[in-house]
Image 1 (cartoon, rainbow, N blue to C red):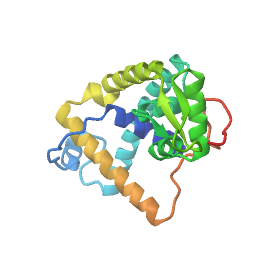
Image 2 (cartoon, one colour):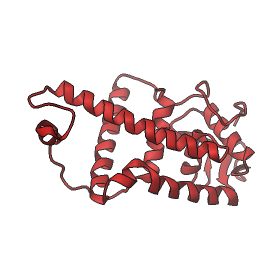
Image 3 (cartoon, helix red, strand yellow):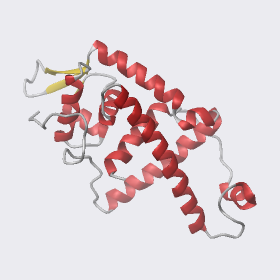
Image 4 (cartoon, rainbow, N blue to C red):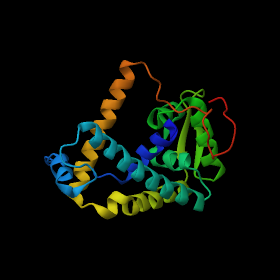
Length: 208
């Protein structure tokens, strides 16, 4: 699975997440070790970790398939959906890139796709004509609201978990993401998506 897919999934999960306080959560191994999951009694942590990885991969596949199916039905790409989600207000191309965790050339590809579908437009800043802002059109705002409603109600966690369980899930996911980001920073890894990775939006990267 490419990093772009993981980032896009993370953004889709944020669309449907509930941002509240989180109650304490019990140790899942107590349940798994009692016949409630795939880990048998007395197993090592490695086995538990493998079961978690397998479960997460299944959720990723299902959520990604839903997002891709929804995007294709609308004639968009998953990157377009992420761009729509991040454009809750007008912002510069650089700001959009930071929010999408991608480089400028990929932002241009996404913006080209949104403009092509009449969902966004680029406007030159009156104070500095070198700067371009991206803003949603009326159609873009309507599409963004429609998509977020779909994600908020039809993702697996929205259907299978109650509010308290989703709060726990959100906190655990954010904890793992934070740990992964910290580890990447320590090792100097680049987690940005580039325009060299596959994109379905169409259009060539252009100077911003």
